[in-house]
Length: 443
Image (cartoon, rainbow, N blue to C red; front, top):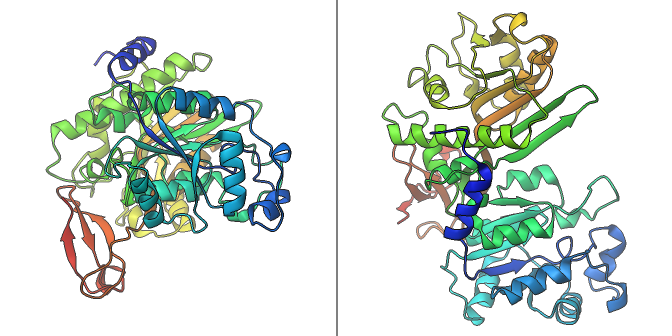
């Protein structure tokens, strides 16, 4: 792989080869098309008071966004959890769109019936949901359609209605397929969805993409710290682009060269894009969290790290204590995980990191304890800018609507860690559930 490729050239290729002719676009209303997340609009959204068209605070560019989608041939509908008369007034008079007032979002049965009544093939992969909250992403995942997290708000600017589910970290943890901070980016995603995939999710399809989840950022006057994730490890219902199947192969002693190549290609593509688009930062060292002597397969992360191609100098900075006998995965909460890292992972020499800009890669982000503990260690030893990358991040579980035919309890979607195949499980007590143990394979 040539990591000096031109990202711009790749984008041109994507535009020619992967443009989508028409999508079914489901748009949230409040916070996505109109600026009504503030608590002062709650009575209108709840149907207590009637809002006049003149008083609706439409986001700049929202009308043009909807008009462009429609003119390009996409089928566009509004899906909102606000009061029906409120949704009707705004949808019909401002955006001229058909709508579904879904007071109990995420209700998939009502959404599917609405789409079916409109003649939409609900099994069609060309459905995408655009929203600003965890409720929107939750609904999209239950529908198994692609989702765009559209973040137009400065969340520190005013008080929000808690019922709207506007919380960046929670929404990220629900695992949207795509991310946009403006309508232009959202429009690009609708028209060219493949080129906007996360780096490893793109690599799984044979594509070079350099996108990552911006999980956390900190910018001080003299340094930055950031956490980025290259793919989603789904838990439960999700769109087809997520890659838990590949994640579970990382720990598999029989993992294939193809799996390693996908992981390395995704990381290499992200780093190449990082260097091209962030030329004002000079990265001095690219390193990884090493494997313990008890890790299976041996050199699990080192094997992937060695395959990643980058012009950034590679180095071994960290090592585990010799007498360590337990696993980080045995520590179940943030505090215990942080303490585990602090006590057992060491920096080989402060001279390796003092004054340096450092990129660290690891396999998974769950609680974030490892990332923040590494940040603390590096800063204590004089590191400057720090970028912590994970191949995957674990997203929150979204249960399917499918019911166990034996006991009537909701089924969960699980993944066979050996082969990556998904199955329905009525999770029994011995595996942390309260079900009967019924299992059904998913085709």
